Length: 299
Image 1 (spheres, rainbow, N blue to C red):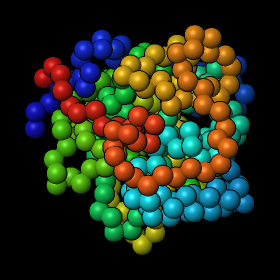
Image 2 (spheres, helix red, strand yellow; image 1 turned 45 degrees about the vertical axis):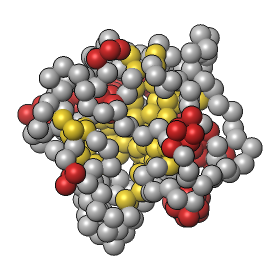
Image 3 (spheres, rainbow, N blue to C red; image 1 turned 90 degrees about the horizontal axis):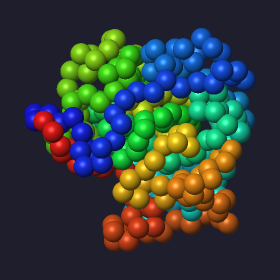
């Protein structure tokens, strides 16, 4: 497999890991923030109780059914916070933002949201990759919150991570082989070369994990008869800049973003779900925004 070290060599991004954390955190402990910076993640974090997550699950049950009826796959609900009031309300929940603020500070911006729903028997996996490798952003000050909508465990394809791999920042990657059945399209070979042994982030519904955009992670095929559904929310600090139009789908959740670089989408009026049609037209309106940067650049 040919290996590359930059999916966007023309952009001259700052491909380093930047430690996060505020001096006086309100919810996260100093030990948790140190764990994030040294090992690349924090998990599990209790956010929603059983009643609250049941309501969220019921909403996504309905949204997913309507989306698939309109021609979308269970992995294509990306940036729907721009069009669906229910998604906007969940990604901007203060219960999540309060934890993220302890990493990013007073100003919190959502770059994008992405629902990952692994259905029993769908045969899909997410190969080992780094989020930041896909994203035309710089500097790399992004923290991902992964909200478990269903209970997630090894059997139904829980996310696995390589602790400390984020300290390497960008590592070589190749284009995924068809037989991987990868939801995305980049694969990092022999990920344990870059950190500790894999750790499975098994979460109960209503819990979140937080992880660095440079942390190597993956998830295997759902081998169970249960769905594994989670919502990934990508938060960043106000000094991050986007290229290639990746600043158009954002929400300024807290604080001030005086430059106008980041869009600030208001709460939608309702629930808009179009039929999947022409890809370019949908992409122009923010309906298609997967991590689809083709591997290229310096080998």
